[in-house]
Length: 307
Image 1 (cartoon, helix red, strand yellow):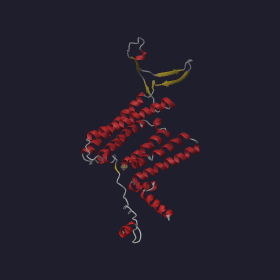
Image 2 (image 1 turned 180 degrees about the vertical axis):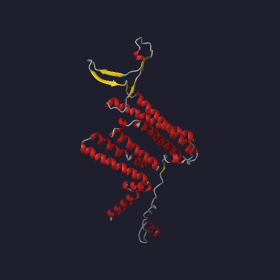
Image 3 (image 1 turned 30 degrees about the horizontal axis):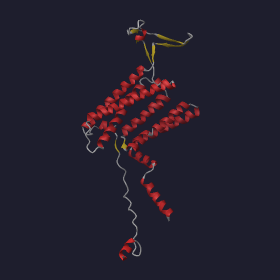
Image 4 (image 1 turned 90 degrees about the vertical axis):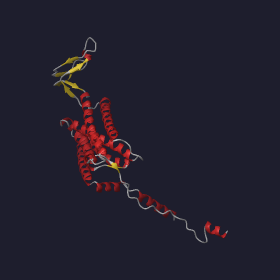
């Protein structure tokens, strides 16, 4: 008998919390366009993973696995923060991950396609501002008396996006310095202006113009490399370019978010990129507490009556 009761309780407890697969199916039914994009991209990455493993391209295989894991980020964010991502925002996030990892890294678009990195940093600034704005807006709505001004929400969104952009640049510098990668891409420049070239040591800027070629030597005088077209800038221009583009993307969405709140959520375009609080799942009627049977010939009640 005890085993049966425990089994029933276990079944009821499990029925109250839907499984991960059920939640995924519910999301698929609610956002068909998003699920179609998600399925198409995931199948593409899986096919690339199979070919990469068969060909022994382990770096490509790594980016494929990383992409598959990152594809779960929107769903996990919805579950963790109890929010609902608009279809447009979720599709842009999925495409951003695919373009960044699969096309940018695995297919070398960062090197072979002009402005690819710049475009992604611009979109990243826009998306991070949307996330920052949504977090601040949700916290404001959950207050008993929402009183955060539209300007304050816009500033929070902008600051959040710029913080994420700066942290990413820190990460790129760390990877290049410690693991000798080249995440901070180099640029060719034809002029150098530096006080280190001043032999008088009086902090005077010395300019070297029209550099056509740079020759790199080792300590023994052997030529290591010849750089045609100028002098090689090692990441400074790339870092500043990325931060400026992040600034532009963050500024654009912060302005959209400002007018979105100012107009009480009537902006359709901005609303497609601002997460909202998730609707609570329909709860089952509460189970009636098991009441102890009181029989005429049993229990304290009858004994009390006899007394």
